Image 1 (cartoon, rainbow, N blue to C red):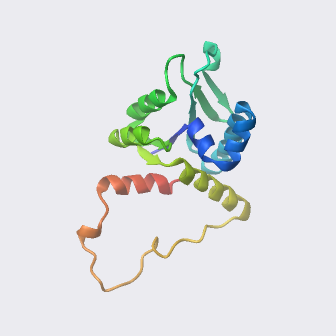
Image 2 (image 1 turned 120 degrees about the vertical axis):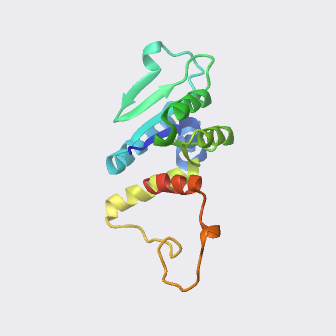
Length: 175
């Protein structure tokens, strides 16, 4: 099942220290830096990626949707927020979507629609790790808690994550 990563663009930029510094200098620089990072990530992971930005300043209709370096860029229309566009996409994509934002309203809605969710700083960390692993090769050191440990202690179903949470973790592991 292909994964479609839908990103709240300005939210990710403003949650990231390096990107927010560029954003303060020039809004366009912040967007371009984000798209460059996402393009590098897409080369490694091959997921479909869409970034949604608020288009509060009226843009010509031809500039509301664009594709740069394999990344789909969407600007919301006049009078519409990026949040609404992301929610509409989450409703349409359902379980194939992974929403990247730190806006709790968006995350709750996406989760209710069956989409996976991840907070912006956590996604940025995943992008950095993927880039690092592409350069260094190999696999990152895994936490001891991630792997199976032989034990005689019975765990039973009460310690098992909910089905919803297990699906969520599966999507995040694909990053």
